[in-house]
Length: 474
Ligand SMILES: Cc1cc2nc3c(=O)[nH]c(=O)nc-3n(C[C@H](O)[C@H](O)[C@H](O)COP(=O)(O)OP(=O)(O)OC[C@H]3O[C@@H](n4cnc5c(N)ncnc54)[C@H](O)[C@@H]3O)c2cc1C
Image (cartoon, rainbow, N blue to C red; front, side, top):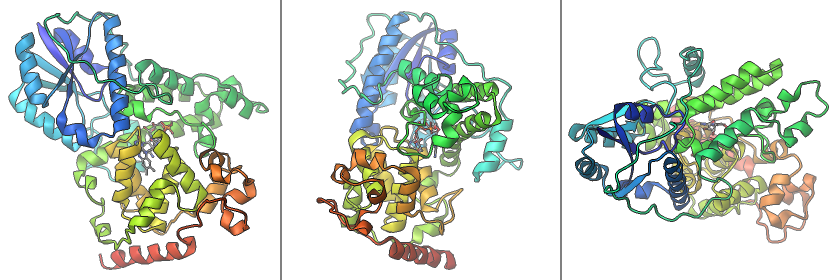
């Protein structure tokens, strides 16, 4: 008996409950459908990453004796056709929680034998609710409950040893050509390498950082340095796995499993706390998926609707300067240029530029959210929307609106030597660490670099007034 494994955002073989369920049921035919409805939602950079990941998944499937069937069209039409061609009796797919995916799957399940299996999250959004059955809207209690629901160990399923051959008569289109991404090679082997490197391997960098420490070698593993280094935009102190999580090239359960292993192997309280901090970030990812699932209105507006009445300035020239990395604030410009050139930005730098757009330029956070989605390699509706709403102070667990980042202090604190700015803003390469964070104050030659487009003190007050106005009229 044949069954279809419909691959969507689960491009992996390891820890794949859906694939294992399908294999138990019959001879699996792996299928990817190029859905024309998704074309507009995915940037060229992410699209290329996806094609590369599918090409590599196909190579992995071939080593197991199988292969990928790639077809274009609406999922319902393609799957109906494939059921006919293969004689398959069921379609197995990993459950996805975005509003689009839920609508699509509901429709398809009415017409075709679709079996959704959990695997994208550790706990289903309907399983992690408050005692009264309503969803959490605040992170800390959500995370406590999320942890309490964990079984003692997450049994990680290995990749299948072999898979059944797909009959030659089932034809596949060619997977579109992709530009290999040198910063983020799109394969499961790479995702696993990054996870292992971050959670278990001693790195030279980490060894140097801890060389005078009394701690053991274990403390030189990056996860044990995370609490100290994660906010430094000039260091490579995070796992760099978000594009892999987004496409399910790496499973969240696997990452959580590795975090817990690291917690239990920690030799000192500081290391343990650091690994706990990383686990907490993975829970943030789950939290934003949970928020989007239960409160789909956040896709289009603020979680707290009163903030949709803020009177934004929305100056198009200032928005262009922000996008181009020409605001005159070096830390903001460094991050915006890095985003455009590579599709990648450190979390702290995302917070700094997001805060600058919303709180210093008083531009609608949704403009920034859209620009990020168009440019980020890890662009993810739930995480990106959550990050923007948090920074704008309009979301669930919002940072209070009166807490406004000072871009100069952020720069001094999280890029203390100016290394990150030097790398991305070459016009300022002639400046030393004391001049680089706010060069206009130091009266140095700017060599074509712009003056600040806004005065932070003025902008701060303007934002406080705009937010207060909607709060007092709520
Ligand atoms: C304005 C803004 C927009 C963002 N947009 C996205 C996005 O589109 N896609 C995306 O994956 N992340 C987004 N983030 C969250 C975060 O910046 C990235 O997940 C992180 O930088 C990825 O790097 P890493 O894999 O090295 O993370 P690590 O620090 O190693 O953390 C491990 C994993 O935890 C999760 N995580 C970490 N921080 C957060 C967070 N604040 N919110 C949710 N999950 C988190 C991610 O899946 C990450 O891969 C955004 C944050 C902000 C402030």
